[in-house]
Length: 88
Image (cartoon, rainbow, N blue to C red):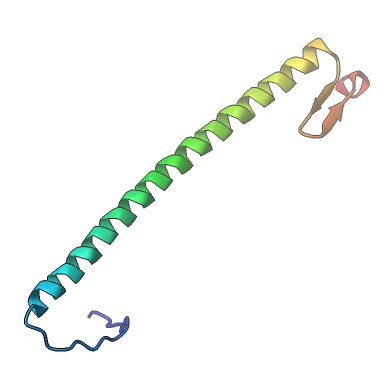
């Protein structure tokens, strides 16, 4: 049911404090995973914030362009130009 993957290999020499060293290795792995999860969470939050800022900026630009159609008689936004004659 489960697939097995070999991620690497290591040769350990016998030591009196081997249990403590293995515990330290596992603790390091757990701490690293927690830090990476926190970093991913921060990046996702930043991405959502930047996306919302971009949407808001585009809304402001769009609203400014639509106001320009009525007021100035010509539209120049997003690389498009609409003259008074084309509007009729």
